[in-house]
Image 1 (cartoon, rainbow, N blue to C red):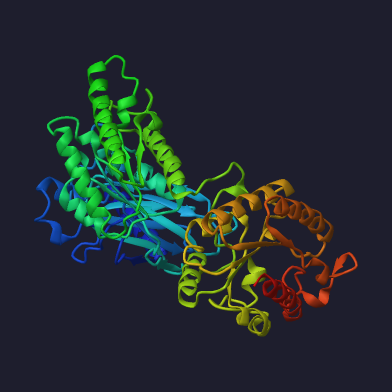
Image 2: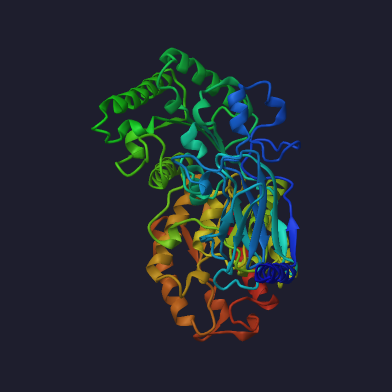
Length: 581
């Protein structure tokens, strides 16, 4: 009798918990990290029409969801994930179930910092993860950005995300930016990472804020025509070709070269200048001194790749690059069995890739926060959407001037419309006739503008003037030196992309109770600008009465101009732009 009483009590408790949760469940209609969305199965890495064009082994591996992720936004503090898999083996001897068959939840906080959520999980006919206590710092009641990475070596059939029914939830729009497309082996697919988010392609994607499409096919990534054809259909920022670990024997160097030449020609049908990054066998530089036969086999593979690469360069093929085994730098801690990277090895891969890709794309980073590009969503609007809208408007309107800044510019006026427009009439009077594009973003700091520059906001600009007014949101967070050094770094990035544009640095506007500090740093900014042959102007005196701000020109916060303040700014800036023209 006691046994049944205990069972009844347990069932009652379980039903009570379920009743309290009242979750709403959401199924994605697409995933990120695939070349083409397959409507027959959104989790396939290659579309169903290619099934008969690739070898059976490639097709089977393509059903694994390596590199795929779901981007969603929610205010929930607890997230549940339920999903089913086609494979019933959830782990391998050298790869845990959490990496092979698990999901992995990351979130980006309001300042663009990545956070990881540990989850409670179970595997079976239906797998489940529960993530609790997900409130990000200073963002407990707001919507946060979440990224759910999918299993690396198993195939998802169905997946649903559950949150409290009172929580806000939405799937993010598919990212429009050009992805990096990577073709490779089991190392690329994610073997043998302990979690999906620790596959090197996923680490790299977070570090450079770009989607990396993972076409790693375990032992079957071998530079084959159907995969090159698939890749060529993607307008990529960069292609990575990393199949040498699968080509250590059985295929001649001349055949490998022929396959690579086909790939180069195919991938460059759309864009003759798209960068191609080739990779040696990472383990070819490993210190396997007790197994020299293995080391020699791996190293020979790297030598073959290096020789082919040199021949391609000598033949005149441009914009190709090589990541060497030495640069990847495996050591005795990098692998569990001499080939596949563990989490340490995955990190070494990601670091080496990031270094060379930043060199290829000319996106360096510094050692201080103002020199490290980062996203943000501090001001309650869709920052990435504004980024895309600004880029689209530049293509549409061909502005003569870009006015780059933070909320002080954002709240002025112009298109795309911000959530506030305190000086719209003044914008239409002074800026619109001069064909100025508003590139102000609420709460932006120097490092956020650097991200925007690296991610294409200048790409299609053909005008003459770039006006930069940024830094006030770094005050109190960074030292004067960090702010000035960050601005210099940013100016360098702008000059690299638009060497013929006239760049004007505008001093930080006076702020209530910070007038003295602003005046001091503006002198340092001016000196930096002049040393870098950049024009400098300061509207500050127009906003002051003596040594304090004129309250009639600001809203109550003593930071943002009101309509009268924008009238003052409009007169000064329009005069400057007319002189520049």
